[in-house]
Image (cartoon, rainbow, N blue to C red; front, side, top):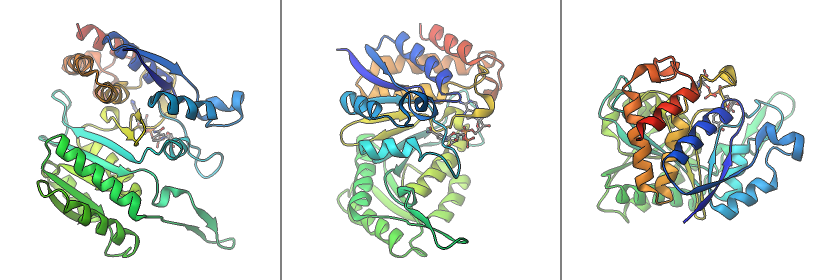
Length: 333
Ligand code: NAI
C-alpha cells in the first residue's frame, strides 16, 4: 500500500541531506509518495509565516513526516518551528537511538541505548518575560500528565525492544517541586513495570557516568531541557551529530528528523553528511512497517561505512553528500 509522507526539506544543509535520503529510501523499494512542503525561513516569502497551516494540515492528514533541519534565529525573530510543530501535533516523545556503528570510530564500544526526552513542556514551553529592564524570567512547567506519559512511553519502549533498565534523570535535589514531580511520576510508573529495572540519577552525576561507563545505560528518560543536552552528549559517544537519528512521536503521528541543525557554515557545498537524516528515514521505515526496506538501507550504510573514500569529510573521507548517497544506493544491491 502506498504511504504518503510529508517531507519538509528544511533550510541550510536540509535540502541536500533530505534529497540524499529521499533518493536512498526510494531506491529501497518502499512504496512512499512524498508530499513536499516548506517550513522555516523558506516558507516566509510565500506564506508570511515560518510554520504555515498547510504544513500542520499535511502532517495531520498523513500522520508521518520526515523533516530536514530548520534554522532558529537566536534571541529574535520567529519562535522555533521545531517546537511549534511538536506542540501542534502533540509529538510528546523525542526518541533518539544511540548505538555504535561497526565502521565508525568512537572512544567507546558496546553502547546501545535510547534517550527519551519529554518534548512539550519544561523551560521549552517558551513562557518568559522581562522583569524590569535588567532581569529576565523563564518559566519551567512540569506537569503530572506529561511526566507520567513520557515515563510510560519509556517503559513501554523498553518492554517492546527487550531492554532491561530505565534511568530517569532529574535535579530534584534543587528543583524540589518541578523535578520532584517528574521523579515522583517516574517512580510511580516504574511500579507498573516490575519486569524492568528502574533507577534515577541527578542529571549532573548522570552526565559524568555517561562519559565514564556509557555501556551501563539502556533507556534514559528526561524532562525536555536535560533531554536536549544529554541526547547530544550521547550522540557524541558514538560518533557525533552526523550519525545521530531522531524521532518525535505522538499519539496520532510521528515526525522523523536528524539531531543536527541546519549547519549554515557548510550549507550548499555538497559536503554535509546525509547519514543522520537517512538513519532517521530508516526509523521512519520501521515505524511504517517497511522492515525489509529498512534492512536494505542499513545494509548499504554498513557497507559504505567500511570504505572511507566514500564518506563525507566529517567521517574522515572526501566524498560529497550526493556521492555518498549514490554509494549507499549501489551498496544496497
Ligand atoms: P548544527 O548541528 O547545525 O552544527 C554544529 C556543527 O556540526 C557545525 O560545525 C556543522 O557544520 C556540523 N554539522 C551538523 N550537521 C552536520 C552534517 N550532517 N554533516 C556534517 N557536519 C555537520 O548546530 P548549530 O550550528 O548549533 O545550529 C545551526 C542552526 O540549526 C540553528 O539555527 C539551530 O537553531 C538550528 N537547529 C535546528 C534543529 C532542527 O531543525 N531539528 C536542531 C538543532 C539546531
